[in-house]
Length: 111
Length: 242
Image 1: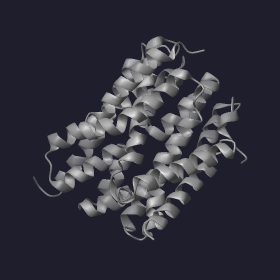
Image 2 (image 1 turned 60 degrees about the vertical axis):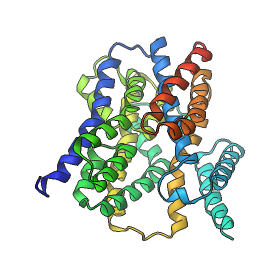
Image 3 (image 1 turned 135 degrees about the vertical axis):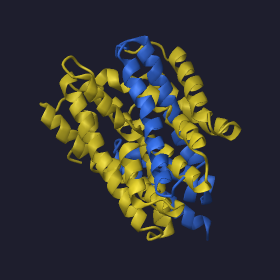
């Protein structure tokens, strides 16, 4: 295929297959009441999928984070969560403490 | 902090809800997601794709894991069928996400096309925040809040793709690590603000416990398995909502 067209075909395909589950979700949700048990079950599945995704990003990351140790990442999560609760559930402070701890622990691990 | 979303119960009008969503996004959410898209922009350049391909992907796909997969597979010379299957599988999480959020955004008088448009902007950050905030808002403010929040994310994600494309390797390595780590940490803390419902709390716990081991066994399907098993167990054990 010509060099000009192929990349566009790739990104358009990516967009279409990603919009598909979103559109299907709107279509199927037409019969779901926000107070129904089916709605509760689907919400549980969605939350579990995302928790699995987040856990994987922390425990088994891909990309540059792969080079940090598991203890470094888990320690940074512990600091972030600890500060988050100490700061009366302030997301910003928890995030800053967590990424600061990651940079610090990663530096200490190399000493 | 001047604005804390966990105290918000009403903005007063649709316009105020839109602005409230916009304002709430312009902070940690935009930084956490934008940082990841800087990485995506750099990845686009490394893979040999052009800037406009990357911008198009961010604007029309707006789901980072699928976009990263697509670009990686493109660089490896995969066929279109393989790419469609892998990205489609990764995007399957958007189905239960959309099905659980849209019933809360819907109300009489809102035409279906607005929901189909809103669905394009459903991705983890906006979904998690809206699942938290929307139920407490009056029905007529929910879609406006969601639109304001995700529009700010969408625009900054496109901008960050461009910046990342032009600045590969410009940041010190440890800063890059910290920014990449912000994304999962932000999601984790956001979920921790939402532990009032037993079934959802159990779903988060089971999903987190099942995710990594299942990923080692079967990477492609692990998220769906973890979600289906963990979510169903949580649903059965969690009992009825208050």
